[in-house]
Image 1 (cartoon, rainbow, N blue to C red):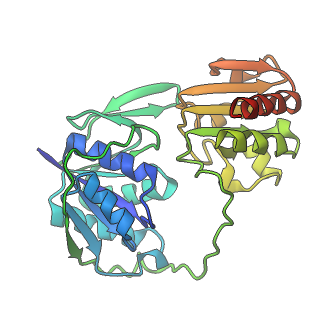
Image 2: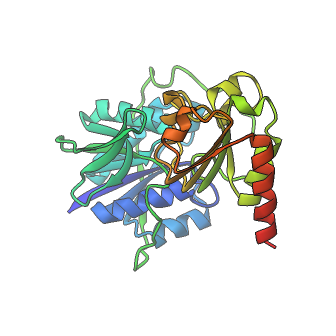
Length: 317
C-alpha cells in the first residue's frame, strides 16, 4: 500500500476545500499523512482527523513564510524522508507547482502538474494543450509528485476518524534558498465572495465589459460566485490581476463558468476549459468561445446579465 503525503500550506482556521479534496484523493491511494506548514487551529486539526490522516509532520522552523518557496521545498523533502512517502500531493497553484518542481529535483522524483483525477494505482489524468485533451501519465520513479486542480473530486471524510501524532521535521539550512526574504505583506480586503480557484461558480468578464464589471458582480452575488477576468480586462486596469484566468493567470475548474464579453482565445481557454458547464455571452456570433460553450447567448451582456440576475433573485424568493 502506498504512503501518500499531502502538503498543506498555511491551513488557517479551517482547511480550504482544495485541501479536503487532496486528503480525499490521498485516502483512495493508500495510507495518508500530512505535512503542514503554519499554525494548525482546532478546526483544521479536527478536519485532518476526520479525513483519516495517520500522522502529521511540521517544520522545526516557524519562519518558512518569511522566504520564497525554497525553504518550503526543503521542509517537504525532509517530511517525505521522515514519512517514507511514495506519493506527494500538492495544490495546483503557481506556488504549489514551483514547490513541486523544486521537490522533484531534490528527490529525483517524477512530477505531474494540472492533474484532474488520480486512479488508485497512482495513474494521473491531466489536461493539456489549453485543456483540449486529457492525457494519462504515471511517474516511474520511487516517489511521484502530483499537483491537483481544485474541484477535481468531492471531499469525503473517512468512515473512521483518526488521532494523528505530530512529528517535528528538521528543515535543512540552505543559504541560497533563504537569500531572498519577504519584507512586507498587506492583507487583501475581503470581498465576501468565494476564492476564485475554489469556487463552484465563476463569472468572468473580458474586453466586452468595457470597464464596467457591475452586471457581472450583481450576477456573481446572486449565484454566490467568484469574479474572474481575461488578461485584456486586467491589463486595462478594470480589475486586479489576481482575478486573471488563463495561461498566464489562474486556472479554475468550477461546476459552472459564465463567460461574458470574452472572445475565448486559446490563452483564456487554458485557464477554464475543464469547467463542467460553460455558458458564454458575447455579441459576436463568430467568437471562438462558442466552440467550447455548452450554452451560448449571442447578445449584449449589459442586457442579458441583468435579466439573468433578476430571474435568479426571483426564483430564490
